[in-house]
Length: 328
Ligand SMILES: Nc1nc2c(ncn2[C@@H]2O[C@H](COP(=O)(O)OP(=O)(O)OP(=O)(O)O)[C@@H](O)[C@H]2O)c(=O)[nH]1
Ligand SMILES: [Mg+2]
Image (cartoon, rainbow, N blue to C red; front, side, top):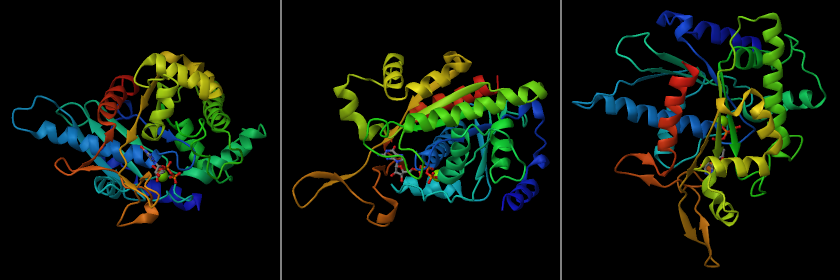
């Protein structure tokens, strides 16, 4: 399967756009199953489109252009469904690649361009990586199923984007499909594995890409608002992020600081869910009426045709971070 995927990827790769290697950067997205990876990328697409269309507004001085090259599955469908208040489908385990985001910040093609391919293997691929890391097995056998994943998304990346749902270490939600229900241990193992591979690789290939920055999304904050308030943690502040990470993701936090926390940025995001009263009169989150298997219904701002939530400012900041830190 992985060979087939690789061949498909090679066929679909985009040298025809003539992006010079200096101008191309890659950022890879990592996170345990159902942590919110696809949702974050869908929200990123929605904000990219909004930003690009603002640029198109008569008289606008901003210069942002966005091109989304879809691969093995449709990220546009994810964005379209989010606009209808629907969470994405689970990303199948055999899918290692979905789409490239091309972002350009100048007027001429090739100027300040980012290519952001992302891996979306969710549960199983990361779980199998974790099982090996847990046993101290870090060597890459080209025949192993996740070899491509490691080559493409760990060794060949400039930035690591880590998705951590705040709901898990505080016990509101469990890890899904992972050998251990220890979200901090899983995230720390994944991250130290990535850093470990990168360091090993640097020894023999000093010209390979270095990690320029690490971005961390603390997702699903909407579900933890009461809990965070009761602990006096405000994730909008550096102090709040520090308090949260040190307490609930201690291993991960220490691992993140390996390259210096100055290169690590945190954003917290949460969507607003619709609620209803159940037969007992309790207020509960409402399932999506058109497609209940997708879970809860996200509130939608129908005037703007966008899901409601706390994410827009974060995505603009993320795009800027990509431009300044990953591209810089
Ligand atoms: N309350 C709340 N739930 C969220 C949010 N984002 C994601 N979720 C929930 O988390 C589930 C998984 O989100 P995805 O974005 O599909 O996660 P993923 O990491 O891509 O999942 P896989 O690809 O299956 O590994 C969704 O179906 C929602 O139930 C959020 O902002 N708030
Ligand atoms: Mg997914």
